[in-house]
Amino acid sequence: MCGVSHSGMIEAFGTATILFKEGIEQNMEGNHSVGEKLRLLRDERNISQRDLAHLAGLSPNSISLIERDETSPSVATLQSLAHALNVRMSYFFEEDAPSSVLHIKAGSHSKIESGGVVIAGMGNTLPSQELEPFLMTLEPHAGIGSERQVVHSGHEFVYCLQGKVEYVVDGNVYLVETGDSLIFEATLPHLWRNPFEEEARFLLVLQTPNASRETIQRHFSSHPSITHIGG
Image (tube, rainbow, N blue to C red; front, side, top):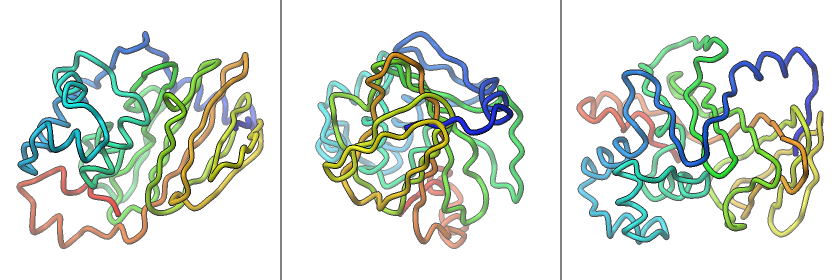
């Protein structure tokens, strides 16, 4: 599902995407790791590892390994954890303070890599922000993990920048090539995969309805993760 549109866009995004060794998580200086964020949020919600595992459809051992940063979670796992904890997936990426304007320079995006998939957060701290953009890079034969489909609220938009990928939405397979776009109801089961021999890169925008959280932010100011609550 990818489509490059314009070479300028590719160059701009290209410098921002860095591939890491499989299973290794790159943390921005001063930021918590994915494991630390997961543990802090779980403690804040007073949820045991076993209960979280049940809610996310994972094993307690998987939760423990992630929290100890002994394994890097896949995209599907992150989405399952975000859904179980009722937060946006971007919670695991960024720690910026709320801002009315976001200008992120190339090479400064927070990223996570696992199983041949690189996820670069493109910003999520605007007040009442409903759109969450990500730059996705899929290595050849990379996918969303064991053909596991995900479901979440809102809509999902995809614009292919380079190569091509397959998107499976509600049992239908869509070939998204350079320059193609795809938008659908995210409540439909879906997954992406790159069964091809070339790298694929696409812009992924997740939309969560009713994202206004000002009252919650003020009421629960002692719980920073509450600002990432999603629908």
